[in-house]
View 1 (cartoon, rainbow, N blue to C red):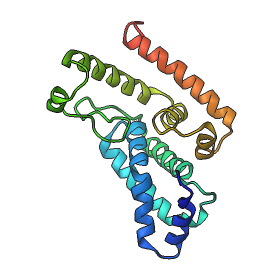
View 2 (tube, one colour):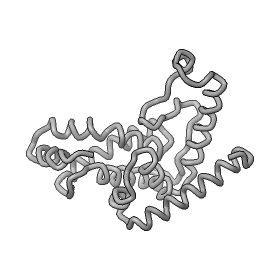
View 3 (cartoon, rainbow, N blue to C red):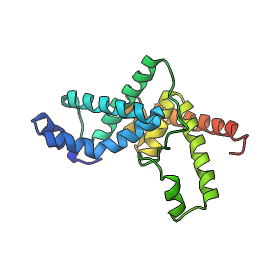
Length: 196
């Protein structure tokens, strides 16, 4: 989040192609990571990422404010929710895909884990299994709860920014977060036999 966002949008509106490239370079990884977590699918998230930035390009003149991140997440959320409503299904997590980490990239491959300093292979396997359980549980959350949790926890948006992105009050964001954490706790406890 930088104060240069307003200048980039204005430059883009004035025909500077590099300004839009800068917007994508600055905010694209976060938006893509968010969409991966929202959809549970790398393929779907890439398609929705393209659609998000097409909409940003088309509607740049409607941007108000100084910081793009909440506006971008609002667009990405609407696109993801609309996609799954049209499809008539909930997002799924593929067990064959490489897991998506909090930085929006794929986690280290198995060989790299052996070479990396850190947990032992047994500990890493347990961590990977726990992360997979968490990813599966997050995808099962209702859309608004899932979006709130992902924006706050993984993308560090404040409740005020989330409220702006979701076009609701801060109180609604707090309620969504409370419900998301409560439901996530129940889903994980049920998955792990009450061990969490």
